[in-house]
Length: 181
Image (cartoon, rainbow, N blue to C red; front, side, top):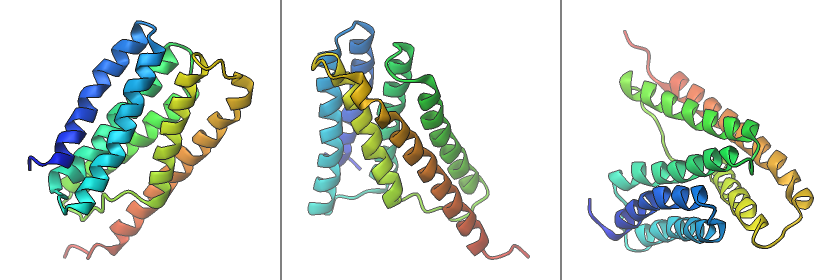
């Protein structure tokens, strides 16, 4: 249970309140540094887990939880600060909430659930991370927001698309379950 990948994942979870506090106190450069550190640690824990065969059941649940905590806190905080449109935050949070409730229902009904992320889910998470990085870097790097504005629609489309894909996967899992007699 306690291995290096899981320890790195816990570190990423602990980055969340630090990140949010830095945003609250208008320390966008430091917030960006913490966010980037968390994003890099996400890749690092997965790499170490695969290379050294340290995958664990705890890590299987903890890793996506850490990603969601970081992303949701970033989207909500940046929406409150008016740096990210609230409608995009609503899409991101709603998708994750729907998926979490669906997974919980599968467990409560004792149905088999495959919680491994799809390729579209991974791409969407990477796009969401990238979008947050762009928004955090916009001020310190004096990026033209009109140039990065289309990214909001790309992230929204990917988030909706991956959400529908996960719902489709869930429906397939339900149909594959043997009927209770």
